[in-house]
Image 1 (tube, helix red, strand yellow):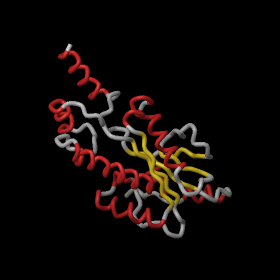
Image 2: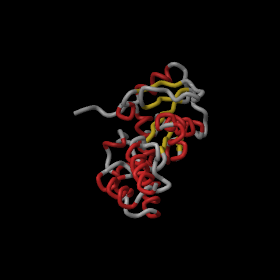
Image 3: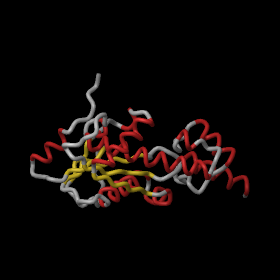
Length: 211
C-alpha cells in the first residue's frame, strides 16, 4: 500500500526559517471546455484535516467534505484562467496564471510555495519549489488539489445547466465519448476551448461546409 502525502516538504521549509508555507495545484488542463482552476492552501500544522490526498484518489463526496474542513481551518485562495486566456496563452501558461492568482489571493503572502509539477510558474514572485506528483506527496498541495477540484466541478455543474446535453455535470468537460458526440451534434459553445484539437477540428468542418 502506497503511503499518502505528508508534511515533510513543509517541515523542511519551516526548518529553514520560512514561516509561511503554502501549497498550490491546478485542475482542468485536460478538459475541452471551462476554466482552468488553481487553489493555494496554507495549512495550520496543528489543525490538518485527516484524510488529505490527491483529489483524484477521493470520491466526490469525500472531496466535498474535506474541502469544507480545509476551508474551515486553513488559509485558502482560488484563482482561475478563463477560456479566452487559455486560447490566447496556451493551457500550460494559463495554468501557471491561475496558480499565481491563487497564491496572490492568500490572506498572507507566503514565504515559500510548494508547486505541484515540475515547473514553477513565472511571475510567482515568491520562493518556490516544484514537487513532481506533489498532490500525492505534500499535504498542502493535496489540500489545494481538493479545493481546486471541488471548485471547478461546481462551475461545470452550473455550466451544464446553461448548456444541457454535453454531460458536463458528469464529465466536467473532459473529452469523454458522450461529450465528443454532443460536440459533434450540438456544436461548439462559448465555453469550449477553441485551441484544443477536437474543438478546432469541428469548427474547421463547420467553416468548410458553410463556405
